[in-house]
Image (cartoon, one colour):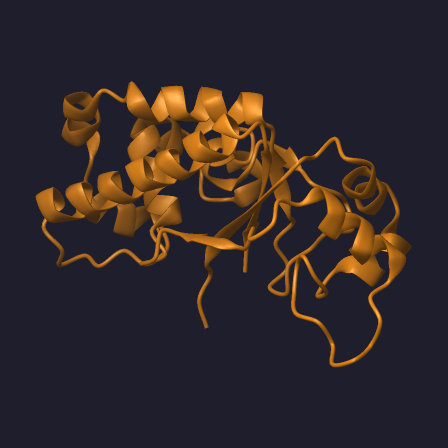
Length: 199
């Protein structure tokens, strides 16, 4: 078992998206069915699923980020000092800019919870543009001076391998962070928003 970060691009302001955010019963009908899952045999789609399919761009699917599950390490790279000060508890980290960039700026809905108990979160196109700017303008040399695999391990970050050299780990996580920024840039350029989940 592991925790993956995935995202789904859609317009948060579209009526059926607003509806599933506001109504748990509609959410329960929509979750696991297209566009968020696969069709259940010949069972007809609920009205809410058909409405969602009308507002989601054709061919849109879940995108996977941080394939080696380095999402917490990416938060650390974005701001090691804040991560160090913010503590390990997710509730504390959710207020930091680094967490919001990687994990979504706000809750998608109180009732939208992944199978491993993580809340679905989302970011608007405007926030994605801010996130991309923050990643693009990262003081790479400054962050590298603060970066330590041993410290990440001591802090209990997910999927850290203490024996990995700092330079290798930093390059790996930075490359994944930049790939995530490229995805956010492409979504924002289409004037779409992003749901981000950990599962």
